[in-house]
Amino acid sequence: MNRTNLLAVVTCAVFSLFAYVASQAIADEAGESATKPAVVVSDAKSDLYVSDLDIQKIKWAELRKSDGNGVIVEFKSVKDYLHNDKKKTASAKQQFIDSQLGQPRFDAKQFLKLTTAEQLIEIRETPGHGGVDIYKDIVIKSDPKFMKEFRMVWPSVNATCASASCHGAPEGKGELKFFPRGGPNNDKVDYTNYLILNLWETKKGLQLIDRDYPEDSLVLQYGLPLDKAKDKHKVTPRWKATFTDTKKGSNYAKFEQFIKDLDGTRTPNYGTEYQPPVGKLNSGSKALDDEVEEEESDDRD
Image 1 (cartoon, rainbow, N blue to C red):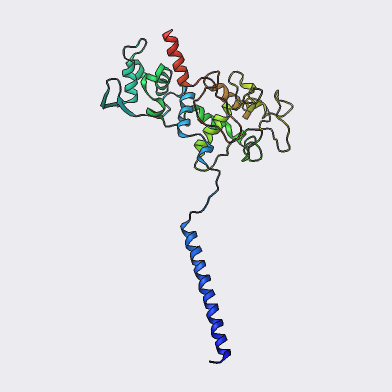
Image 2 (image 1 turned 90 degrees about the horizontal axis):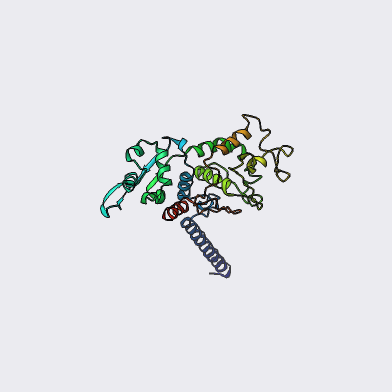
């Protein structure tokens, strides 16, 4: 074989080797990427919103007699703690009734005649809840009236104050953030926004929802045109009034009525663990369990 032919053979062999190595590298890379899960960046993190347990706590705290029989409830079966019989079970409702037998002012027949909401409220307001774990053994499965009404008045605020250019931005504005509706997390988004609306306040202690003086609620005052508001929203390039007037039937009037219809004149301490990614929520008033302990202490005194 002459020198020219030998050089051609060697050159061909070298190119073949490079081609083989390159093809193996490509195959390895393809195989590796096929086995690795894709990294998805999403705002739909579970810790952005209230938990299922927090939702139950909010429902229990905001339940009112006007809910009547309109709430769907599951009374779970629990062990018979009254007789220490681990094999015997009864519904949480029956356990509560059994725990109250012999107590003054309790009549089992009258209790069973109450509406679903009235029964739950009596359980809620009984010291110790009759030994029933209300958040675990009794599940409020439907939305009480307060949430149905909230969903009716929230869209006007959602379109302005809670929009992506304002407090609905990923980083929020002024230490306050709301979350947009849409997708599978709507329920959690609604309860999260509701909780923030009730527990957020300014450094001066002004509340977004003021149950004592509904017309002073910042969600209303900050939403009014500057010439009509007592507490004026800071003027920013993208700020837009949520409400145009306070006339009867206006969005302002509907939101004010929603606040007036909330149960009680003080914000409950829902007992929730949630804190938003932006800003901080206060604790409200006493939690249900704190109120129970205080009542039991008063009874002992």
